[in-house]
Image (tube, rainbow, N blue to C red; front, side):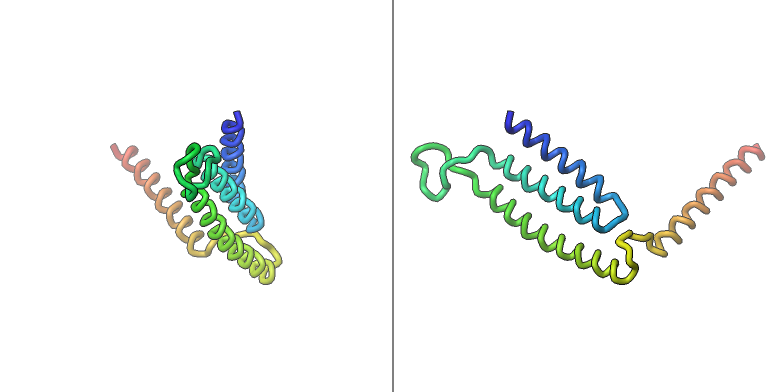
Amino acid sequence: MIVLALALTVAVLYAAGTYLLFQRNLSRIVIGLALLTHGANLLLLLAGGRAGRPPIVGAEGGPAADPVPQALALTAIVITFGSTAFLLALAYRSWLLTRSDEVEDDVEDVRIATMTALREREAEEEIVVDEEAS
């Protein structure tokens, strides 16, 4: 029962984190990344199974704990700290320059999207002309 509740918690953290990552505000992106990484850490700890005896003590007296998920969780925490610090620095710089933390479309992305839409419209017009000619 506890494992099911923790698995459901991981799913909710992943869903909320993914939703927030798709937002256009840097503050929401930072919170979404934090939720995703908390979900990943919880998933790693769930993958480790039940707590056991320390692996260094020896094989006597029950199963030993697997140290790999704990090591991966610690590594994920360090990587998360670095990524979060970088995103917070970007958000702060964006706030200083524009007084907004909204992520704007890149000029090149807008140009490519416009050209793609024009090409699709031209292709549709060619299909209509070909159908009328036949």
